[in-house]
Image (cartoon, rainbow, N blue to C red):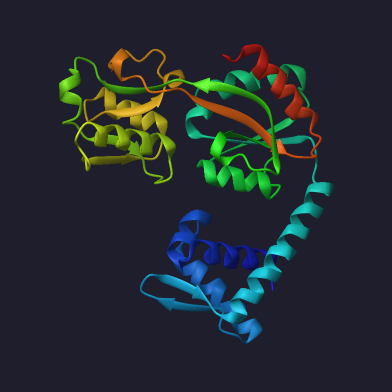
Length: 278
């Protein structure tokens, strides 16, 4: 039995679905199914009950899940202690990774040129999990994802704007498709759809994109409207931001696990405090 099989099993249990777990893990569904079957064969036990809505753990599956959580936690903690600490692991959103973060990391490298950097971009719930599981040294999180086991080192505001193709009138915006990140949990997606609903359009046409650049380019070409932080909109000639449509700002927190002592995180904190908006 390999630790990765336990991680796959845990993700299936959390997602309640083999297909959803495969998406979260970046695996093909058949691979996840095969690894679960291998576990069941090794343990000579049925761990999951498959049904039309997904999967449900059996009693044996529940026991294995409890044991898996403990085993994986021990492995991750041991790995963290022996891992080369010259790598600083940062969790950030896609939008932050193409706007503010590169500038901060440039300043960071000037102070710690010997430090390797690893940036993982994902949804807020996944970033919070990576931090809690020791897979990231710090993460940039919205307030609702900061748990009691975390502490915040610094914060800054992101001004959110609804953006439209150049020349588009406000009255035309509600008739256009919503261009959103394909991750259903994306907070900007949720806010844009809420804006449509507040304007009497509960189910706008949806265009899903994987990256910030793809969203921006699609808006420039007139495919629809979107909602993004103002920090990603520099030098965009064919996008208009209507002042009346600016949303309430969102505060983002540089977060670490309580009790952790990562010098690199403290240096990043100072860079943010010296350069971020209050």
